[in-house]
Image (cartoon, rainbow, N blue to C red; front, side, top):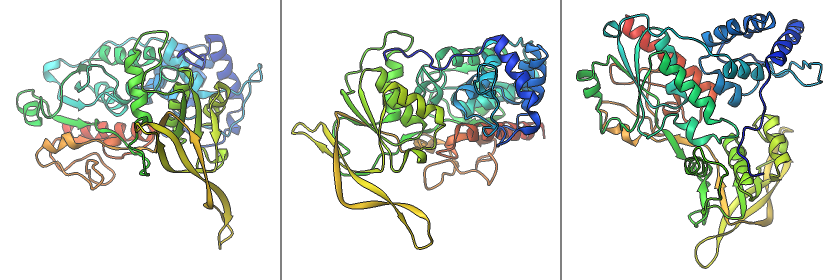
Length: 438
């Protein structure tokens, strides 16, 4: 498995139209939670079923300006609705969404208001929250400038998602569309050190700042020996692998990854790291603190990982890391777990006494979540922070302690899911718009 090409193939126009028609036939039987973005997908399906592909794409973009992202990374909605097409394949609304995102080019006339008459908003960070907010603010007629500290755009989308799940083509297509809508992008600008809030307001003429950057410190295991050479965060491995090989095939093996890899964690990032290591020719074992049924990622991701060669060690909890004489990883020591029935009759996972074992490894990748990386924001006068390092905002809002400065995404809510980040970013864009219009 040496290729990083996208695993899932997209739909053709004929398949997308047919699947839309089939799904509508079962509309009365829809089950499961809908899209958290409050996207009403049925008008989109009706237009597509009538062969109005461009109209369906425009309708989709009204509530979701990032369908090329959500169709690849977000979980399926109405997942309990089991509708199958003539090929006996389950009809996926996300696959239809991806077809409309990838295959239909939406023409934009650009801002309808003269640039001199529009309020200017600076969005700090070009990751998921920043792009979502920028899209909605631009659609409402504001002049939006996205400021990125790195030399490339995309933030976490570019750094932490491998090419086989989010190809550069999809992200570049989104950035190009936002540019066509009037969004300006500035890279290699470190806020607030190279460009302060005061400079943005007074010299730049900006009326509001939206903070969306700053989630990026991985949580480690906190066990003995994890400082050994060869133990690293899955997030760092994904970022290094992607930046080392940006736009180049075939992928070569990075020297910092050994032949036997153990991945601790079973979230999306853990699976992405495991599947990346498989593509680099490594033997990969994922340590699961429970049964396979306890894995929270979508079942199709688990299935693909198994098909690609990832192995699972279930009911195991890391205890310590063993290193050799040179300080390099030799093995991960784990303790067996088991189910027990508690006093209230509930099944709980407990550690089995005196039941340790070792998993040999040259590299251990840890994916236990992320916390806010907001130390750089301490230079913003008056900006209050929470004890966990995240930016303080008024409850259920994006208003910070500083007038004209807003915040959204994982900089406010570390660990938020992709769709939660998008919902928060859309709300923040609405609040910035209301503030500037009011």
